Amino acid sequence: MDRERIFLSPPHIGAAEKKYVADAFESNWIAPLGPNVDAFEAEIADYVGSRFATATSSGTAAIHLALSLVGVGKGDIVFCSTFTFVASANPILYLGAKPVFIDSEPDSWNMSPVALQKAMTYYVAKGLLPKAVIVVNLYGQSADYEPILRICREHSVPVIEDAAESLGSTYKGKKSGTLGDFGVFSFNGNKIITTSGGGMLVSNNRDFIEKAKFLATQAKEPVLHYEHEQLGYNYRLSNVLAGIGRGQLEKIEERVRARRDVFNRYRDAFSGIKGMTFMPEAQFGRHNRWLTTLTIDPQQVGKTYPEVIQALEAHQIEARPLWKPLHLQPLFQENLSFAHGDEYVSTQLFCQGLCLPSGSNLTAEQQNKVIQIMRSVLAV
Ligand SMILES: *Cc1c(COP(=O)(O)O)cnc(C)c1O
Image (cartoon, rainbow, N blue to C red):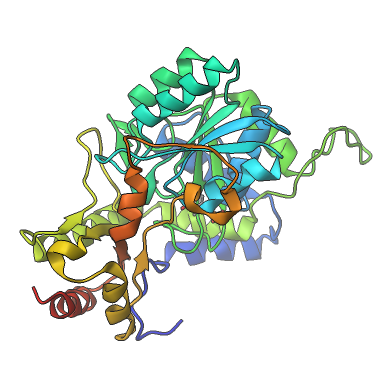
């Protein structure tokens, strides 16, 4: 990687990772199973406080498996947060089901219980129910699960928690990823910890996790020859990559602290400036601050977010827009969506928002450079 460039969220690798990867090489476990995979599953389950876990080749694969396990199929409706990365919803399409998008609420930027209730009422009146609800914990902050779960439980609709960005966050004392019937984590290169690519599905339901492992290994029946009754996938994580994950996980609390420190420095640098609003941290939990995100109101600040991104880019600094809500994506133009109020909160955030370099290995010097360039472009 280019050493001069300041990245949005680069990998942060330590020494322990090399030891676990070396173990894999020395024992010749260069396979999508092995001791690192078993240990990584147990260590993630233990860290988040879930009973069972299965490692997958990606977070997307874990979402796909969770949807398959609750029986999502052709023509089914699945509710999904609109304000997220496309990977949250793509697996709904893989299964031939129909996503319906739920807007954000302003306090956490996550799924609005008000919009969720509207959507549920709309479908119940038609005699239909969603087969599952995918709730995303955006930029590392948990959604507000109490009201969300109340609405879903009332209709016995399973909840899949897309915690791809929120490992290390909490909701009312519980670790992110353990609030729904399933939790999904991602270890893609840009996440708070990484295996370069990988994911994890967690649940307290043993049958679900055993079935997930079965589906993720081509659904091979437990007999001597190759017997297949169901459609399966090749979704298991490599033992080499699980070794990277084990080393990374040892440092999760440090990584959360570092990202929160990065956030605090940005917030302090721009505190009191009208029109610059950082993503709030809701009362109900700890935000891992995977990415520092904020909105810039051009009326008050006199500059738009693309102007800030371009000014940073001119200095080899990577900043990015917020996720474009899925209900605005051409891919989903046929799909219904439900707003929090008269307008979409997610759309308003998208129109003004950006993410700043937030890596746990961002140095104070690098961060000062980002802040200085922002101050000069914004004239604050
Ligand atoms: C990264 C991400 C995913 C997908 O994870 P991969 O491991 O890249 O497949 C899903 N949902 C959200 C919200 C993400 O940020």
